[in-house]
Image: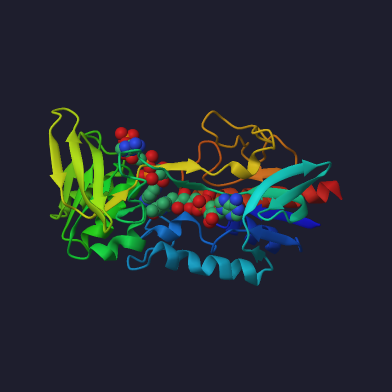
Length: 313
Ligand code: FAD
Ligand code: NAP
């Protein structure tokens, strides 16, 4: 039986793994269905993690050393998707894709969040054929071409900055005239001559053909005017949904208390309403959705896991 099962290998899961193994637990496995690193590996930059101030490094570069450090201290990684978690008496059963089951004394859920779809016509049809949620992955396809970005938060504006260094012009479409993005980011955006802010506007339709996206129709919601932009790249950054499926029971309910938005309710020690079950990072209530916070959550949860196992012994 595992001392601790960690579900998800982003900043929260990796840090939980580091603290649990370095804190003396011998049998800790992190179940991460992809490569460890989490959402930040999709980012073209990170400049707000204390002590890391290298402008030419991507989110992928940033996370590279985290896993090496964890594995050095004994964390094991299973590249498997967890279907769900069940509490069986005093311990947990981790049910993996394909039906394999693993028992664990404690579980830390760090499954994070996924990009939301905006819901405009053509979004699903052209997803992966011009519509993207990853500038680092797809920006280069539009080298020296104009692209459209949808959203007004930190992600949209930071990725618009990244794209502005590759693409000829970046049109940022936002449904209001005030942006959520941090003021320093907005200042940098405003200094970029090839970023154009298209406010009070929504995407009416993304259209194309068998070759992929051919353009977007943008509607000004104050004037109803429609502008047809022949940009073949559209980057959608409209927020995230929490990934809480692993906490669902067979009846569609949840095994621990959640709020109305599907976020896990935890206390300041990352304890859920179920003994021995912890949640850390973007999927918990009031998560600021920052790497530094997710890492802090992971460390807090792991320290609690160690105390819990000692108390149970
Ligand atoms: P995640 O990073 O989402 O990791 C969750 C992991 O769990 C994923 O790797 C996923 O594959 C895995 N997983 C999910 N479900 C399962 C399952 N069923 N079985 C197995 N594995 C599973 N924050 C900052 O502080 N600074 C920034 O500059 C910054 N820039 C960002 C730029 C972009 C483009 C994005 C998308 C986010 C950015 N963020 C930034 C936010 C930051 O990335 C997140 O807050 C952080 O990654 C959350 O960490 P996490 O460990 O909670 O979850
Ligand atoms: P976000 O802050 O939730 O912003 C989403 C944006 O998309 C908002 O501007 C929203 O408009 C718009 N939007 C939402 N649904 C839409 C729809 N259906 N159609 C059109 N527009 C829509 O999401 P985010 O930018 O991904 O950031 C998520 C979290 O990660 C935030 O807490 C953010 O601070 C953090 N983050 C931080 C950094 C950093 O610190 N450097 C970088 C990236 C992300 P409204 O404004 O009108 O609601």
